[in-house]
Length: 341
Image (cartoon, rainbow, N blue to C red; front, side, top):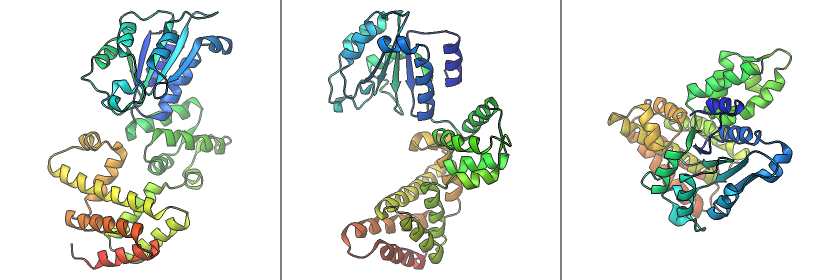
C-alpha cells in the first residue's frame, strides 16, 4: 500500500490492527505518523498513545502498552521504531527483545490497539520467522524513496491541493538541486509556496534564487572539471568549496565515492544491468544512478580509475602531510592532467 492510499483509508476510518511501515523516505514517514496521531484527540493521546524506540527500550515494554485497554477512549495507538530484531543486524543490538511474546501478539492482536511498526531499513531479514509472521499479519505501507517521476507527481499533487502551479523548467531545476529527494523537495516547497502566494505560481527565477545547489551537485561539477583535465576550473571549484567551510577530507571522501560509483556503473552496464537494477544492486537513489550513467558515458574507465587512485593517494596525504589541502589538491589535479588515459 502506498502512502496516499493509507491516508485515504485512515480518514475513512478503515483501520487495521497492525501496520508495517517499511522504507527510509523521511517525509513520507512523517506524514504517516501525523495521520495516525490525528486519529486521537489531544486528551485521548495523553492516555492512549505510546511511542517506543526499540534501540533503547525492550520490546516487552512496548507490548505491555499495546496489550493494555484504552483509557477514556475507543482505541490505543502504539508506535514501535527501530525494530532491529527484524533485520540481519539483530545480533548487534544492545537490548534483548522478547520475540516469542511478539509472535504471540501477532497471532491474536487486541482489536482496540493500532500497532504501527516503523522499519526504516532498506531491507528486512526475510529468513526470520518473526519477519515472515509480521508480513503475513500486518498491512504493509511502502515509504521507500520515490523515483524521479514519482517525486514530481507527488509535488504536483501537493501544489494542486494548495491551488498553486509550478513552471516545468522550475520543477526540473528543483528536482536537479534536490536530487529528486522528496524530503528535500518538500522542505524547499515551504519557502517556494510562501514566495508564490500572490502569483500562485512557482517560477524558474524563484527556484534559482531560493533553492541552493547542494554539495553533491558541486562535487558532480567538480568531477567533470577533473575528468576534463581543466586545471583552472577544477581548482576554482575546489577552493570555492573550501571557502564555504567544507572540510577537505569530507570533500575528498565524496569525490572518491562519486568516482567509485562511476566505475561501478560502467562495469555493471557492460554486464547488462539496467538503470533500475543498478539502483537496487548499488543501493543508490535512482536519480543519482541516472546522473552517474550520463556522466560515465563521457569518460573512459581507465581515466576514471586513474582519478580514483589519485584521490585515494590524496586522502592519505591529507591525513599525514603538513602541506595545505589546497596545495595537495593542486598537485593531484596537475599530476592527473598530465597522465595519458
